[in-house]
Image (tube, rainbow, N blue to C red; front, side, top):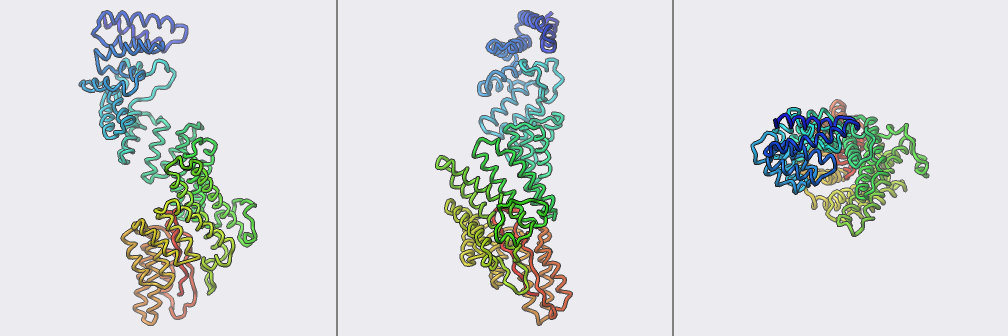
Length: 599
């Protein structure tokens, strides 16, 4: 009886894997004998040949195992045990003819063949669209999706590694399908596929799949979920390359969360997110052997340090600063301002390290000029951030009729002038290496605004010539015209900005221009009141886009000015410089701040 002989042979083969070492030898010889007997009883049945291949593979005899698997597939092209066994021995290119023959069969157990074809299309050929179809077909097959229905399912696994906990193939296939969707840019479909993969594998996804899922969530703006997944992966404590990538993704998510925290006024939480991201990246400094990878790490590290310029100085009151930051002018700065500047200055060190790493490659890397230019541009932004913090601490914007603009502060402070000069030099170096970098031109214009407004205007215009859809230089040049009393020209620039992006500074600038118009119509109460109402509406529109401190201050004062006697008002107000830039582009060029307006 063939069925009884084959069932007995498969039983002893199963016992060979499940039994201890003493009884394994008896089952080993008996299983081979019974399988050979079953194969001779009916040579048209594929089962004995497939299990003989499993037996030979367990004995490290790949040549005979390969022959048995091929014999089984010649009889039944879709045999799930033989197909998986041959996949462990052959490469995907060598396996392709067997898979194509199996997929032509109308069989419910040829999912292994569809999955192998999907891997070939995705991993080797780079055809993710075709791979999606193959993975979808595989998930419809019983040997992938309905595992547990085959009595020989145990032999799907590698017989040489029986101690490894088996992973459901359906979960792995869902993960491979999700990766294809991610590379095709179909993030919603990728998210659903990752969720199915997690369900199918009972939440035990591989680190690489979890890393890809976190990247999708990062691209979709789900920063909290991405950081949470990265924390789970990193809790294992290993230092594989996947864990290094996970740490980098988590730091990116934490930086994005910090930007959201600033908009919501959660400054302490923002600092904690920045510090956590810095700690993650610092832990990678001794693990990365590739200078190219470490270049990305140091650049992101510099971005985390530089973003601290968006925080108020009192957040750093409990921090400690290096004694090396002390100089003659630092003695006039408060303890928390020195801590903040010391924190931001660490970003300067990171960007300089990134420059050195890019210069190590030299001419051997065709991207060398762009890598150095990018690091130089970010270095200029960091130096300018330090100058702005120092200028604000020394009295910039205090009003009262004194000269307290950043232009005046640079002339009075050697430290600020040194930082601005170094910032200009860094931007100039970036432009020399990459003349078509619009963000570098915009940064150069922002730095030059404190020393040479005319040259600054030229830099902003050059940035717009390179990229007409860049909002930062338009905002900067519009506010510069407003600062110098060019109201009509500033209004034209702000009108052009409405066609590019809906930014808070656009409405803040519009509100300031309307306030000026209200002052000009001082003798006519109706016209002055109408301008002030429109100014309040402009500030309200800015607040609807983002919780900008300058917009909030303008909105509050516009309301107060409407209720006050314009003729008896002699106070002056300050538009806070913190947050007047576009927080979403922090580290990529800062926007000019509004000056003080007479009430």
